[in-house]
Length: 314
Image (tube, rainbow, N blue to C red; front, side, top):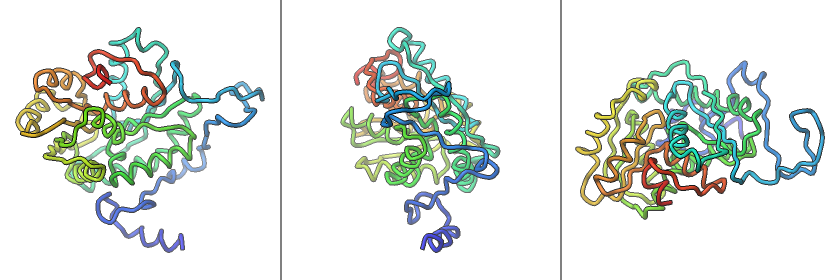
């Protein structure tokens, strides 16, 4: 039965939209990675554990919550923005963020072209093939939490697709995971927003998955503006002035409760901080949402300045 299902799905164009169902995405590591990588899973329940120094002793790590936390951040190898944004937010609030650290590794993307829908779907397929290998390497640092620093895969397939991705990673690692999609959902709920507009760097297929996700969880997407960047690295080089122009001319529409920015390689934090004060509505920059969500998940409730209303008010 499982073989019949696989055979049927092999001929399906998996785009997250058309008849999406769990199991369509292939997260199996690509060869030779599948022979080189061993899953490392956090253990919070066993009476004893073997520590990294080889000593077998009482397992005193009973929780992944606490004020001193190590978080691993998974990003595509083409992403040059997430680390900058995260560390910039932390260093702007150095005293409040004492003890917070990030251990980051890039998922190998050897074809970053995103000029068409097919390019984008191929990019996602490459991402999945390298995901577990990258996670296994990062787990050697014994982190307490995972942040998925790549947003499109978290929107793929809507709400069910997001849940499937989180479950795959939890089974592999035993850790909770912050995804950009779920972080945006939680952020919007804090502001009581229902009607949103969205900025993305994606092609049409990416935008359709974003709309699918937000529509399924109860938000009305009044308008979405996709910048249609030609490659994954191009996203990091989009001028701030261009983003501001799109926000002002396309996304500030009557009745909008909040503006959401997707795409973690698009640095949007300073612009969101500035425009929020002028426009009078929340702007959810996805890298802010991911960091905020992850810190709140591990019990860190510090309020941060210079990181939009989300961190100051919630």
